[in-house]
Image (cartoon, rainbow, N blue to C red; front, top):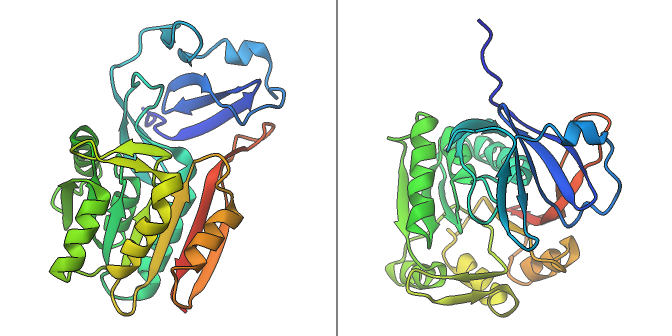
Amino acid sequence: MAEPNRSYQLVDAGAGRKLERFADVLISRPCAQAVWRPSRPQSVWDQADASFTREQQSGWSFRRKIPSEWTCEVGGVLFTVRPTDFGHLGVFPEHAFGWQWLQQRATEAKQPLNILNLFAYSGGATLALAKAGCEVCHLDASKKMVDWARQNAALNQLANAPIRWIVDDVQKFLHREIRRGRRYDGIVLDPPSFGRGTNQELFKIDNDLIELLDLCWQVLAPNPAFVFLSCHTPGYTPIVLQNVVSQCAKGGQINTGEMRIDPQPGSLPIPSGSFAAWQNA
């Protein structure tokens, strides 16, 4: 019997939506960037097993009964995916190229790295780095998401990997790490446009990103390997991220660009935020 297909695929995008296959479940969701016409016929879109809308009665509708959760592989990492009230599924596929970049930096280091992953969500970067032999501190303000990430770790046979699971406010945690003298060889961060800490501390990227990056550089080891910053906030283009990182970095090299999701042949890619990848010279 053939193995079931557990991989992710962008099938099509257009008319403000995207059609994605998470393992054997086909899902249609809003996508503001997809202002072009769909490449696939409507008959393909009509096959969606589940659709999410944010108009009027926001929520999910189902063509057939789907599992409450299932397993999908994205970028070489296994995830438990499940539909949430916000239309998310517990993984952002545009980050997969970044995980590969991080794994390559870890391999080039030729020694185990101690990495801090901030706003770590369901653990994609954490698990990719753990697979590459890194020790990782995984931090998110949501206990629910940290529990979800730990479930993903077990799914990837990484339940006993050297990962510290922390539920905390990012800025408060960084201040404490500075006082404690704890240092990291690399940092990964994906700050939201707006968020709340564990005690409802307010994070707003327009006000807090510069200070956040300053704190990150204070907890880096004397000879760090990298800092990988990604962002989905509208207006935070690659040039913006280049500028803010360049004001914190001491030497090294910065590569920036758009994150994207590449589709199956015949459809168009989706731009999905920006990144700035700094590595030591």
